Image 1 (tube, one colour):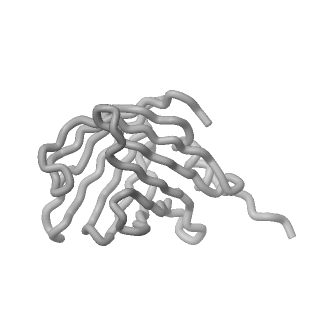
Image 2 (cartoon, rainbow, N blue to C red):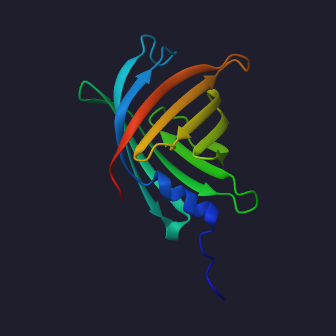
Length: 156
C-alpha cells in the first residue's frame, strides 16, 4: 500500500512556514484593559510529512514574555477546511479553529471557553503577514483583540 501524500490543500499551508516578527497592536480587552503595543514572533515549520504546519508563538513587551502559544494547522481531508489546534498560556486547554482560504487570505473561526473568535491572516504581499483577531464574548458584539503586521525574517 502506498503511503498518503499531502494534497494541494496541504501545500497551501507552506506559505505559513518561516520566522515571522512584527508589531502587534493590542486593543483594550478584559485581559489588557489599557491595550498597547507588543512584539510578536511566530516560528512556523512544516512537519508530519507535509501534512501540518507547526507554530510556536511568543509575545513580549519591554523585553518581558507576556503570552505564548503553540498550534498545529492541518487540513480536514473530507472538506479541505484548514483546522488549527491551538494551546496557549491562558490555560484554557485546546481551542479548535476551522476555516478556508479566500485567495491569499485565511479566515478561521472558533467557539471556545472564552466565546467566539475570528482570526484572519492576509498573505497577499510577499514576505509580509497581516493578522487580526476579533472576539465575541457575549454572543452579540465582536471586538478587535489585536491587529498585527509581521515580516518573514527567515524561511524554514
